Each structure stands twice: as C-alpha cells, then as structure tokens.
Image (cartoon, rainbow, N blue to C red; front, side):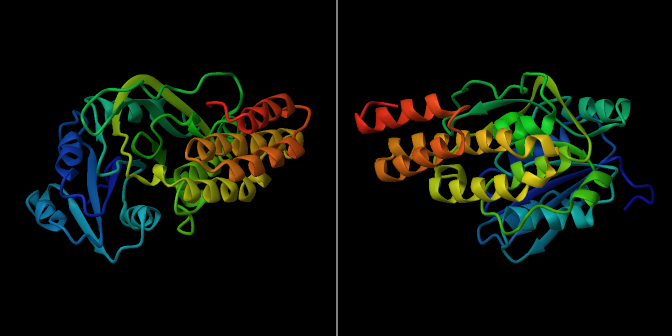
Length: 299
C-alpha cells in the first residue's frame, strides 16, 4: 500500500454481484485518472462474488463483512478510505471514460463544493438506452431543490464524488433506511456545502424491475422518514409552507404509483393528506388527482 494517500477512494458495495461486478470494476480500472484506491465491500455475498474479486489481485482492496445492506457496506468502505475524495459506484452500474478526472478537477477548482455528480445514462437490463438522468435545472439552492425533487442529484449513488471531510461532518449513510439512503445523504451534504453537476454523461446505471425502487411500500416509508428527519436542515423560512408543499408533492407522487399498482385506497389517503398539508400551493393538483382516482381514469 502506498504511503501517500490517494486523491480518491472509490467504494464499490457488492452483494451477490457475480453477474455484474466485473463491468463496474473494469470501468474504474479503465479511467485515465490513476491516483485512486479501489475498495470493494463484499456484503456477505453467497454467490461467486468473492472468487471474482480475488481474480483482480492487488488492483483492489476487498473488505468482507456479514450482510448489512447498502448503507452498511458504504459506511464500511468510508471507514477504510484514505482518499481526499470519495466516489461511489454500485456493483450493477458503471462509469464512462473521464469520469474521475472531470470530477476531481471540478472539486479542486471549487473548494466550496461538498459534492458533485454527472449526467447519467440509463439502460434497461436488455441494454435499451432510456432518457438520460440529466443535471437538475433551476436556480434554487441545492437543499431545497432536493426536497422539491428527490432526483435532483443526477445519477445519485453511482455518480457522486464528495469530499471525505464533508462526509465526516455529515455522518455516515443512515443504516436504518431500507431505501432512499442516497437522498438522505445528499440532503445532509447540501446543508454543509455546495453541489455541482457536470452536464455530460459520465455515469451509466441499469434500471431493473427487481431493484429496491420497485418496492413501493419500502420507498414510501423511507421518503416519509427522510422528509421528516431532515426538515430542520432547511432555513427557518422554508420549514413551513415550502416543506409542507414538498411533502405534499412527495405524497402525490406515491399516490400515483400506488394507484397504478391497483391500490386506490392508499392513493386516496395520500392525496387527501397532501390536500390538507398544502391546500393553497398544491390544492388544485391534489384535487385533480383525487378526481382522476375517483373516476378511475388513467394516470
């Protein structure tokens, strides 16, 4: 191990990732920027993940631990990291050429930034390219923007590079969350420093139907927890009407998804809650959705 700490620590959590981890690791090793360490956290895999990782030899460090979930694996990687910057890559995603170099240059040139991400290509498991996940638009500061639109940080986990010092101040990923742990962390980082997005597709993710994002109840519970636990991070002037409007918008989104899955009663409950929370700013929208659910229209 080099005595000089690397500029970047790349952290790859892997759980039963034998089917995809080579693609992720090879995309890191293909980067032109070389001043990094590659840490893979084998989170209790029971498939051939360990054997595949062993085949990479000294090009990476493997941390093996009992299965604890994505946040636990990332936190283990952070604890072992030596780099000034932390970059995360989920085992089923991959990077495009130039990703590390561009992000290091950005953080070097703008010391006020706590973290950054990139526009991200999105693919189906069959390889069909969907619409890119682009950098969030608008002039609103980052923290309110994440409250208003959880997908504001393009690419989320696999696209973000952050200062390790900012992570130390923010605390680790919340291991009590079963979903949206990324959003929770970006809110906490945004409360500490700036965020910027490189408007160039340098990250690629695979959108899978069997991923955690397909579990509506888990995501809804996590979204509620994240919106509530981080409310205090907002400026005092935004903790009232703005937060209620953002919370109502989140409930409306989950109501639409629940309705599409055939859960009309859950959708109605969330839409009524949204209407009561923000009758002025979100009332027309909530009422329109309520009417559509009552009329059994397509949403």
